[in-house]
Image (tube, rainbow, N blue to C red; front, side, top):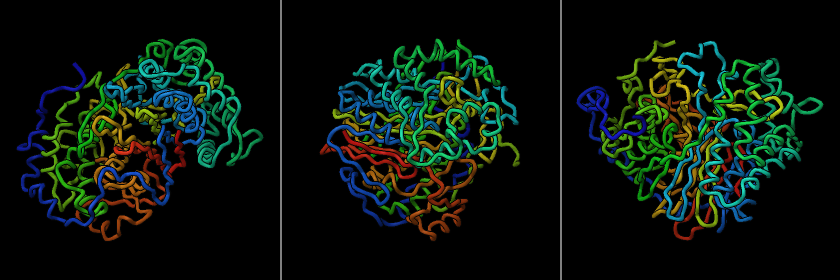
Length: 599
């Protein structure tokens, strides 16, 4: 039986008297964290999160709110709300619009997760529309020389089925009404901003794209007529994509998974080394799953379940932070950053050990138990970093030798949707289906390609995420909804590969623990540790993290890598709903453009 299992973990790593626990018996009690640094920052209460920050102009509304990476897609979502649609209707419309106006990650050729929090008494649900491995896939299908932009690396797309499932369960407006705005954007053309033109120009400038046979359709569809680079203010028309979207509008999901569009996708596979068949497409199903629920500071936190690792890792880390009063110390202090880094690396080690598609893998419920978090916390030295290698007693280490988008929606009733969608890398496989106009994912790269090869550079070869036919690859996507007394108060998530989980974590901590206004919570610097490579990535663009703090962290054993504003971590388009006034505040992350708009 697969899925979440009730039993306690029995590997030596889980028993404190053996394995990892033995290595840390001498460490001081975790309660000494409190004594390290006095209370230097009294955080405001939960009700205060909703004011301005320097790089972000928050948008306030008493009605619905949409925040996404594209002004065009945001406007589409708000128009759906204004015409009687609910949050899921708006999310579906935004998803299809992003396939047109943000092609590096918005997609119908990829997949993702939609977290839905109704307000009519129904329980929150996560709609899993993650891609699957084709039936011909095998554990040893990839060689070390295989690239990340091939036909073989494409997983069976899930987006259209996912939107169909969301509409069937929650939709109010007709399906066609939700897809047609995307059709109009594609066939009529739209004005591009500098973020989109930069994205297109960068992918087309790659030598492999310019010279590779498999990328010719990408060049034809997205190349500027007459040559040269696209500039902000230019208009782009996508007629082939418009025709595909019109088919989906008229025929529903069947118009994508069967018929002419499906045949075009399979023909594209045959032109390269792809293995997706008509049977793979016809057999794909999205799934409604129970979210990972945890509690933090009196709120319920709903995260995406496996095959996403986001919900489990977030619950595990928040449970650790329940063990210590972070609010009593300064947000950017040595003690706070050290604790966050130590917690992150342990969560990511467990991610490698245990997480995969729950339809194929037993995921221990112990991971999200408060008792397990307390045990993890007791194994952390308050003045010294734990080497990542010391956490890997069950994983044989080999010898030495991200592109997604998130959007948030809340309607006038308070129903909330957090949706993260991806093609995997920026522009996925960089392959456009000939005649159909949409970009294909390269999600098969998210499986563990080489069994038992886990190295210090971050490659993972553990069993739970190895390739199997029909299996969903492990994801870091973390669409998250935080509720208080059964009503959503925070809708958030982010792109960014493995950094997604830690970006989402910090938005939650910034609001719930440190009382930051939502715009500031999204705007400020972020840190990231993913176990291997054993490096603590630190954003330093505003110097909230002082140089003295960084030097202290290094003396404690952290390998700190400083990153400027030019090196983005995430794109956390978020919404805060004041639990008293019910007023919505949207914050579009400045790192990649973005747009917030109220109903």
